[in-house]
Image (cartoon, rainbow, N blue to C red; front, side, top):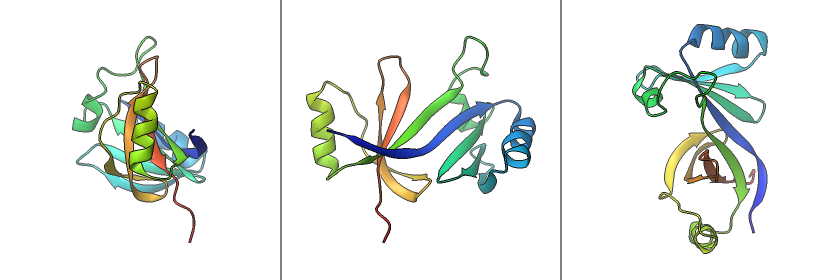
Length: 136
C-alpha cells in the first residue's frame, strides 16, 4: 500500500518564460528558489511545494516535445511525496501490480535532494514518486 503525503513539485513547460514568471512570481507571490539557465529551469517555491518552469527550447524542455498547445501536453511530470519503508519494498509493490519503473535517481525537489523514481499512469502521464522525509 502507498500513502500519499503531499505534492512535491510540478513541472510546466513554457515558451513564455517572462509571462509565466510574472504570473507565478509577481502575481501569485511564489519566491524564485533556484535558477539553472543551462537547463532552462526556474524553480519557484509554492508553499511546501515547487513549481518548475522549463523553457521548451532548452535541452530539458525539448525532452517534452513541441510547445504546449490546445491538443498538446504541458505538464512534463508531477511528483507525489509518499511514505515508503524502503526502495526495494516500493519497487516490489509496484512490480507486483504490473507497474514498470525506472531506477531510483537522486533529484532535487521541495524537500531538497532525495531519491525518487518515475512511473507512468494509464493515460501516459509521468508520475515521480518520492519518499517523504520526516522532519528532524
